[in-house]
Length: 580
Image 1 (cartoon, helix red, strand yellow):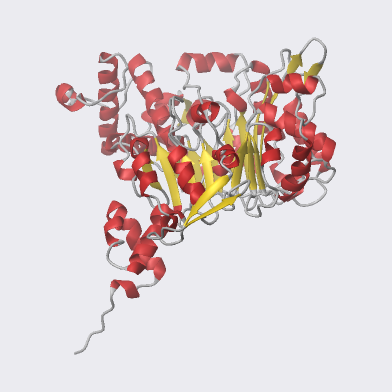
Image 2 (cartoon, rainbow, N blue to C red):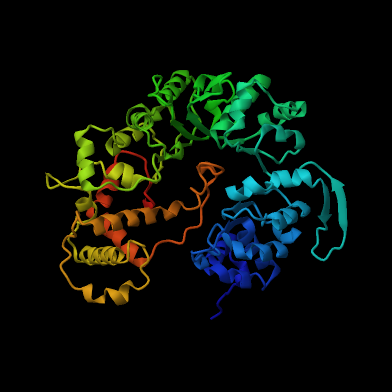
């Protein structure tokens, strides 16, 4: 009987993609077998490149994830040296997620290769704030190096074409540190659709106080030509937002029709003797500059750092004015709310809490698909005794139940991310079991009595004890050999009032947040959650995964199931743990 067979090359492309994903780092070997595989593999390997530190962490399991290729910093020079015009054309995005010491610009060889490749459209995101403070961004590098020698299209070509241009035709995004930098960028580059502005605080406020405007008229011309054509605008510091409002308001009357907008603002009072500036974020003024009804993604990194309690409740006022002004259906699909620099002042937290609990008008966003809220990325879980004191003082806290009620107004909302879930949301909840009030530790750790969870509690107790014996260094390399005598015991419960257990629980929940390592890197300077795609993540040790399962059995599974009822939520990311 005849049987038909087909070669690997005859599989549909989506099947080949899945096979290549499973190969991981071995995909590079497959690329050598045929020109077709070489093309398919290179499309995946070069599509999105992450440059990472590679110090103190093992990234070997991340070198070829399904969406990213990881290049440790110590291999960057070799990686840049081997780049050719051919493989650069496969690149869609490069993220410099490392943190250099600022002594030398380690990215110059990469910039040079990208500039001389004459490649297609590419996005370069530099999150290395030390590098940016000491050296040129790729935008500045390209402007300075106007005489370009473009390599030939073929790898073996010796032809070089010399030309002069203001910006590389393929760079999709620009990063500037002063709006006057626009005077060196050509307004004839059709591929650029994204502008990131990071202006350090300091002289910017003083310049505005003295009524100084853009110093170069060509900057004014470029503002008029470049900004209206942008799709994405990232104002990554309070000074960036204030400078943008000040300059753009004076020169252009038509609101920008953006798809993505990231705003950063800190309400404060700057006094320069001769003039004072109130840095309050005003929706009424912003709406004359930006068409909020057209936005698909919005990130607000804001706080109120007014030296006295803000009588205007500026954060709440911003949303009230927005709601009152909304006359057409909003296109917004993603909303990111971040307490800028995790400001913990009483007045600021009071406004942030009131906004999320009672004033956030989610009902005006019928197309909203994703909600991201971060209030305090630095806070640890409180001691049980402190939680009771907070309740006694009637301190306002984030209310998970109210959030659940509010999201019922969003029929298309499918994803919610709360990075600080454990410290800001879970701890102050009313925890009960069988009608009896219990503390948050018992609810999270001691809730399930199955044999698997009892074993996991045993792991938890051994880790906590080992850590306490070693000065809470959180290094567990020799745990097995040193703690082997402690394997036996009754772990129906572990002591919620033990300092060792409390500190290990905090360490554990902070470790879960490694999931946000790259998306949160320099988030308060040059990064944005809106830029996040699928980020590299190595995952957790097996023992930690067992402890997560214990917490899920104890209460998290029931909690998330109840939260998703009567809503369209399909994915919840709570403190780095994904549900759904």
